[in-house]
Image (cartoon, rainbow, N blue to C red):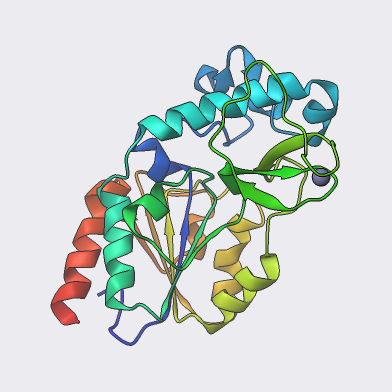
Length: 241
Ligand SMILES: [Zn+2]
């Protein structure tokens, strides 16, 4: 049994769960094949501070297309299963996602943190305050109404620090179980959370179609897609709840 009824659960989700809703993620091993390319650009060439300085129009075309794709996508049974699981343990559930799309919130997840930023938020490069933004910027570039500085996607680019790591570590410290779903174990600091969990004696479980790079670090590995495995886990938790 992966979870006991009294567990406090920390869930980390990654690219795999969005991919099952048809969203390309572009983040991945640096050996990414053609599938990792966008219009012939490597993601490293459109998702970095350097890319933003060199060609903000290109960066906004990339994120506008991603907004378009996410608007057309729907939460899948894995997103829904995690929202249902939170419903069973509402005050003992924390979901940290590496994904920037909004499929978890559209599935009903509440206690949710986007460590790599949010596709449907933007922020002024000077004021730095994120705000909701569903607009597409494929012709004109947005500027701040208050200070006229450029507006950028509220995304953690390669080389930037993930958001609210203190909160993430605090939530992991009080968890009793760590569930990692659909992430390759290649992107740090997210990939290091399992090692922290091990040092604290927290049980660790991985769900994904193939073993992650850091497979040895997990107590248990359930091989399969998130949409296959997570509804089963949630159903089991419902039975014992
Ligand atoms: Zn501003």
